[in-house]
Length: 294
Image (cartoon, rainbow, N blue to C red; front, top):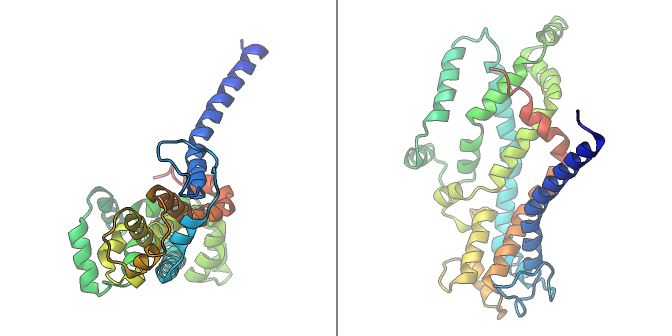
């Protein structure tokens, strides 16, 4: 029998472990924030400073100024704001279709989807496909290939199968068509998974880097991740090709590369951090719901 004293010690141990884990997670972000606001004249790479000895926004001015940042920020906003709703719409409509047992060829489509989870075509076939479609040097080359994935389809399919079929039958008896039932009944009941997968797609599109390096040759179409990578590289070496970065480097301010990197990390992660609290209440429920069914 567990006594009150032993139960209190258990709660204290659990609280201590949770506090330690929270500290391990929060500390790197706090350190990044602190370094990003540290003046370059007092920064020391071998010194752990949890608070800026001398505050400065030179690193943020270095990262944010210039035409290159504005165009890349617009590119990331366009890719994320257009790609996320499109990915959610395609994923939900396809998953809803696969949740119907009477669909002809349903098992065939399921085999194809599961096959993509096991075998990936690779970089070269993907590049050739995008090239043949005519999407090279276009933002759609990043949006369309990421419009859905097998894991999202399987989880959403399981969720739709858990919705009582009687709701759809009653809607059809009232004269509702398939599309009207889907948009006015099914989707309003799917707020939790929609919010969770919207966050997944938004983070993936916002952080897109490798596909942008492959498919986009126009520097004005680079998303924020690629531009900031050029800024970080330019702050570390003297040879680079981006004229917008060159204009920033000739300002005469000596900024340590580490400070620039930390400022770039803050700039990239801040928009997603601001969005996450609004979706947090749906996040855990949306990830778990429908995941235990076949």
